[in-house]
Length: 467
Ligand SMILES: Cc1cc2nc3c(=O)[nH]c(=O)nc-3n(C[C@H](O)[C@H](O)[C@H](O)COP(=O)(O)OP(=O)(O)OC[C@H]3O[C@@H](n4cnc5c(N)ncnc54)[C@H](O)[C@@H]3O)c2cc1C
Image 1: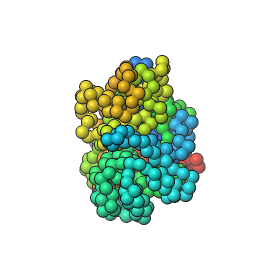
Image 2: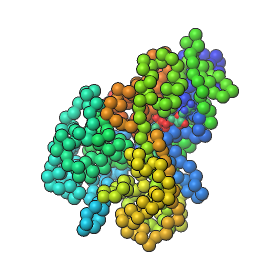
Image 3: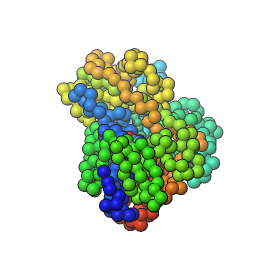
């Protein structure tokens, strides 16, 4: 690994954790001329957004999407030369199928027009069939009230979004058919379990900032192609030394101000350390005195996401994705091409956020629950044969966006000079997303560069300017 004495003072850094936060921090530091070693415990980069092989298929651990307003993640995709592999829709268009009506399935769409905010959503809301006229008008009023909230007001974080919606005239149906439809997928919690601050951030940024802000992007290739292979290529050409299967067991500070990073069988000496691991691991690795109240990291809860994967022998879904009401099914994505499936079948990934009730259910129970629901949702499945059915479970997919979580999230700087924190769970203002991870990585690299006296690379995404 790296030899600190060879590199000279102020010139080297170790990044611990090869998720999106760590990869971003490593790239940003290396682009500024710092000699970087990136250490990842698993055999691959990408952290919580990865792929694996299952027979002929390449499977994502969970469907990931991003929005046009995720400007830092888009910068990251550009930086690793992957933007073309995860394009955005030209214009927000989400098919919403309601199965609850006795008269049968009903399709609505959430779309935008080429009009300024908030008129860009006006026509879609006015014709959204899953809400009554009165509910649509009330949604419009609540959206305007949301727009008026000051995201810098810490009091928002202490309140829950569900109570705020009720206080602003939102019916249970409006919460289900609109607010939770978007909120559960982006926050990984229902409105009643979400901080008003985080929910307001999501809705203001995604729906009420720029007309195109909520246009949806997703990878047309396996996530591992982006976050592992292409990320690794970018790291290699930036000169980063990457060690996978290299779990850091402790970090400590020498009397001379340099840091010692311990991996099995080796000690690495360095000027700066970016700890880009989940909050629990960060707590375990943080040296005494690095944070005023390190136990707060353990108070940050986690929330699960379940993905149900079904391979049919024929095409059953005619759109790239859809979302549903009146069924446990949340979002369904066509992953056929990305997975490499050939031969005329179709591979669907059903993405279930805030899946606390189902995350431990046996596959047989989930199969009995989801196959009939998919038959109700997609009539073409009725004559189709199920060639494969499996699930992926991420029990700690995100931090739980509960009211009060904001005061638990630390910033990039610690009290220990030369030690920085990154991760989607740190204080980025964003919920646990790829965007938050990338922003945190840039924030940590910025703080480290300042301390190391290195100029920030001109092309580096500017978190503060974008705020
Ligand atoms: C199923 C699922 C669906 C999701 N859907 C979306 C979505 O649609 N859109 C979106 O934006 N986000 C989504 N997310 C969230 C997103 O994936 C995460 O917020 C983001 O990837 C977190 O990145 P990170 O770098 O902060 O952390 P992580 O990805 O957790 O990376 C931390 C890394 O540190 C490594 N590590 C831990 N301890 C050590 C150690 N001691 N030594 C070395 N390495 C260590 C871990 O192995 C890991 O690779 C989803 C997540 C899941 C699981």
